Amino acid sequence: MSKKPILSTLSSALLLSTFSAVSSVSADDFNDAIDEQRSIIEETDNQVHNLEETISSLQEQVRNAEDELKTLNSDITANEDKINEVVERLEAAHAEMKELQDEITELEDIIAKRTEQLENQARKIQVDGQTTSYIEFIIEAESLTDIIGRIDIVSSLVSSNRKLVRAQVRDMEAVAEKQERTEQTIVQQNALGAELEVISQDLEQQRLEKEVLVAQIAAERATAQSDRDRYLSQRAEAEQAVYQLIVAREEAEQAAREAEEQRRAEAEQREQEEREAAARAEEQAAEEEVEVSLSSSQSSEPESSSSETSAPSEPSNSDRNQASSGINGGSASNTESSNNNNSANQNSTTAPNNSGNTGGSNNNSPSDSRNNSGNNSGSNSGNNGGGNGSGGSSNESSNKPAPAPQPAPAPSGGTSWATLQPHATRLLGTRYQLGGSTASALDCSGFTSLVFRQVGISLPRRAAGQYASSRKISRSDAQPGDLIFFSENGSTISHVGIYVGGGRFIGSQTSTGVAYTNAHTGYWGARFVGYGRY
Image 1 (cartoon, helix red, strand yellow):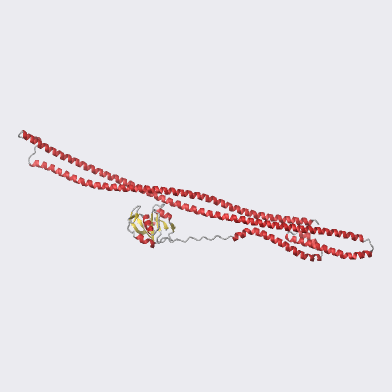
Image 2 (cartoon, helix red, strand yellow; image 1 turned 135 degrees about the horizontal axis):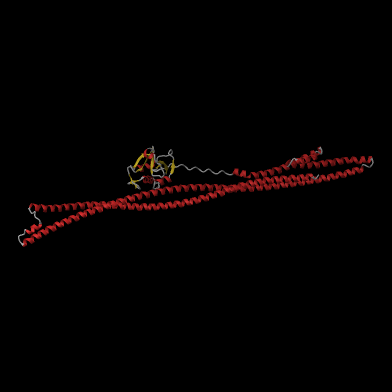
């Protein structure tokens, strides 16, 4: 009789342990998911930190490169000033050379006149027959006074000739000295101009390289910032997922606690009912034993008395059996209800009780119905609680609104050739000059900058900078009005023009100035790099 409470207690313990195991597994799943999301958050934090350091380093490089560019621009300006100064000196030297040529011409005229004067004197002496020397001329004097006169004449002639000769020599030396000095000045100025031109080209190349470097660093910084934003978005999503998982875990744990408390209450209620049924059964058994002992004591009386006594006792026994069967039926009903929800072992225990009699079985029907309804309700509510607890995360995840799709940026048509054409064609025939940026003389990037500036668009001054900051366009998508870029050495952008369609572009070339030319054939076809749009 005492086996039924023990089996019921064991079944309840087994049910509780099974539910605890399920709750533990669910909690572990939630914890694993939360740990996984937190590891994602930590990883994205590390990535964001590294990218921020990269961005800071790139910004420092950009600042340094910009400072170097400023220094280079200052050096270029100073060098251009020197070139202008040398040009002015060269022009002054040429002017001085012209003046010297005029002076030389005048000196040569004077020298020619002096030469003619000396030749006339010699010719006069020959005509007059005075072929003798100055000494013979003095000796032939007739008197002292004549001698003195002749000496004065000879002295005057010699002095005059000596002055003429000295002036002649001095003037010729002065001419030679001035001419030599002027020629040296011109040579020096030419050499200085060539040296400054080389320096100018070197500085220009350095500035171009710095502009390309700044553009590359800017592109790397933009990529790093994009990656950082992406990781920040991933971290935000992971943090939201952790929050949702924690909420779902708490809801599941709360539902599990409520279901466990309900199951424990139902198990305690079943155990109480089973104990009460066992107590009633024991009381009934004790009453039956008392009745048996009374019957055995009465069997020794006379038969008539025994018959009279036994006749009314049969209904009593029947009633007792019927009551006992009813009690056993109730016990079977409860046991069967518990059996339906727990295990098949209890069926073997309750089977004898269900085999009492038909009346007991009929009396069991309402009890079975009520108990099954109660047990099913408890089981369903427990299962629903557990189901809701374990399914909370799934429902919440399925009800989570999908992120709104971000609209793709509308493609920009760029600046049309129809807008640029009036300003570009107005400059046709303008001569090429390195560094030129005005309508009087232009280089390639100066031409594109000037044209785009006329329509309100500011471009970088150099071709490499224009390429770096433009939106790159494939050759198949190129349209008139896009910039077209070329490279002389295959590594740096060295030329730019405006694409006009039909495989042609307009630009300022060194050989033609501002003119139309072919883009994909001939000289420029082999040096084509790509298109850029503003």
